[in-house]
Image (cartoon, rainbow, N blue to C red; front, side, top):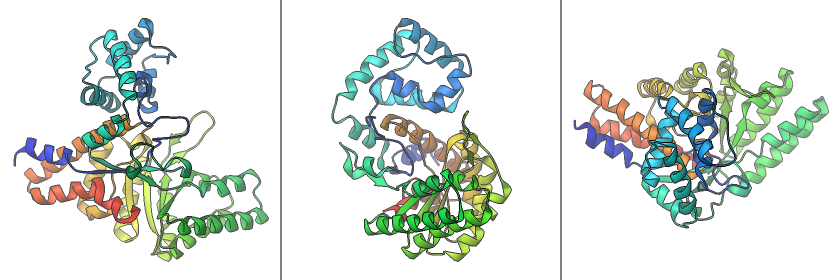
Length: 375
């Protein structure tokens, strides 16, 4: 096979981003300055690890400090994404602090162009982008690309946690049922829940009641649930946490509610393989995109291997960008496409699959898998 031609074929495949914060309240879809790109949370964590401090301005001193941290973190995947964004979308290569100031100027100028968001989508073949807020799912300049998977159900659970009791359980169940009925009536196909909210409920009976209320009602309406798992919230910062019992504890729900699809978006490394095993055993379980601290090349290579050898690609969406702007959606999309191309090319060369199978697999992972039940 010709690796370059194969990689280009993967790069040109359409993409369905199953989780983003694009068009979040008080935010534009496009980056408005260098800070919107260079200060992205997952990159800034790495920059701060080498002593960088965020600046409100982009003067010479700030650009110099950023360039120093940027150079020291060149090995990281998030740094690769930023370099890819700047080169592909703005024609910029960062070789000095002056390039950062130049980038800031060009990004501000491009942000004023009404066609910019559409151009980025076209360049990355980004066809669909998921938003979790009902008020923000209609994208201003590219309305046909927005998809809503609302996090409405987190509200009744959070309210219950403020004053938990037996009576509060009944009230929460009623609210959850009503919310799902309304979502179904509005034509919504699925709902997002943060599983850490339920894990914070110490009373296992109460936890089971709330989960059962959600899954049974979604099952009734043949809707799916996008579950974000593997993360613990803490006032000083959230962190990933594996729990061997997390997935096995959900198996009775998987089996009792076959008309509800369970998409598992995982932040903890060990639980990623647990989700694959659950998906092998349960037709309605789908391993989703890698999220938070699992969004790394090493984790993608490991997860793609596990999914390829055990599951049909149409069960496995792979991209949940967590992007705050369209440019970061592009950068993370390109990273995932590159990793998929690299991984599948190796499988073709090893004789594990044909080149045609590799292309079909990539197409399903990137778009067709989520499109089958999101649209």
